[in-house]
Amino acid sequence: MFLRKLPGFRTANPWKMFVGGVFYGLIMIVCLIALLMGAVWLLFIFLGLIGLVFGFFGLVISLFRRKPSRFFAAMIAVAIALFFVSSALLPPSEEVASNNIPLQENMYENYVVPEDAIDLPETIEPELPQTEEEPARDDPTPVVTEERTPTAEEPIASITIAEASITRVVDGDTVVASFRGQSERLRFIGVDSPETDQPFGYEATAFTTRNLLRQQVWLEFDVTERDRFDRLLAYIWLEPPLSDSEQEVRSKMFNARLLLEGYAQMMTIPPNVKYADMFYQFQREGRNQGKGLWSD
Image (cartoon, rainbow, N blue to C red; front, side, top):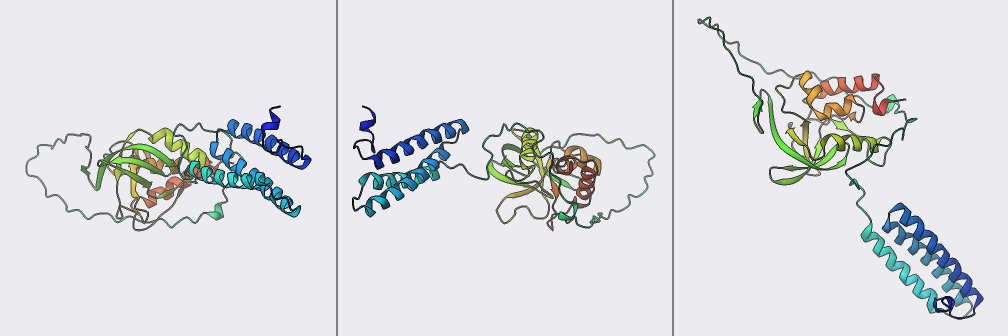
């Protein structure tokens, strides 16, 4: 018979046949679960755990009976090998498995963020640049100025922007971008979205993916250009801004959109505080309207 060729069934030992039958049955169940979940690394972990437990207890009992069994020793060795294989197949924890993330509606419909859990900073009054008054013109002819769209890395009043392309989304407030010929990890200034394994983190990641993935954006830097993890710190403009007014920030900056739609909370880290007062107002609007994180 076929069973007689399997380890554990080659002899008529009832104990070995019992352990072998339970072991093979669990293997089939685990294989089915792992295949349905699409996680190969989880399959190897389950098999390793089963083999380690049965192998250990089987070896102890066989030693107690003074009949050491090579079958249980081999089972332990195979289980350890499976753990090594599963560690190699384990996906990175911080990366999004797929950039085409479907939004799961009502996943956290009962989740409410307590207001006292958020430390909102005081409003920061921005320092306005001093300008000299233009002397009166003797010529009464009106001056006509031509409006045009700024190009990449061109100063716009007090703004200098640089063009980039988003190649991958890590989570709601972090992406990978092609910038100046290099692949750079990019962190959004002034906002903090939940991690992908936290409440509402999945929705925030999906929102950023839908709006930024494979899109051309324009980056604006503040005082500090990189953090201690060597990530670029930037404000993300979806269109080249004509100024740094509140209307332009509200309509064209993605950092502001995250706050207005409730997919992030305000996080101010000096000295990058150029838009801190606007971000404070945007978060209050999102919370008052019950958007995203603030929904009941």
